[in-house]
Length: 141
Image (tube, rainbow, N blue to C red; front, side):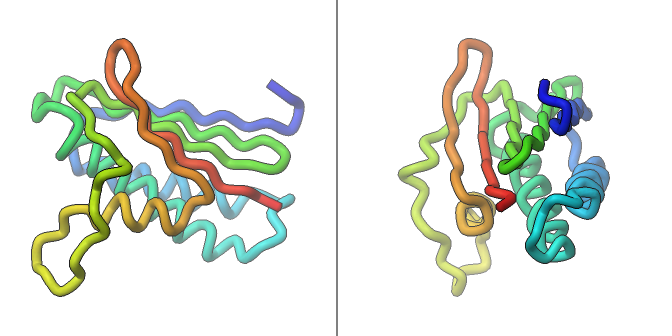
């Protein structure tokens, strides 16, 4: 790790009651990024949103309902980029075939991924040997 690099490694039970905690961690990280030249309050809100949505997806869609499972999140900040990795042990899905949400409908399928893609600079979802990884990147300069 570089001298100016920060890595936060979080593991929480596969339960929605930890959503606000994870969101607040994202907010606090954004507010501490002194080298970020943009609006830190907006970045804080966006990180709260993408972390919360990614965790909801890991719990609801990609993971099992077994609360013994953990949601594993790694947040890495280097000089020019912030990377968030969310690991899940579910069957996964193809992020590229999820249609944009129909905001007229009450059902919210696809809204989380749509928001994540619109707020982050790059988003990928890959299968690994023991699960899946949602990787989101945001340029800081």
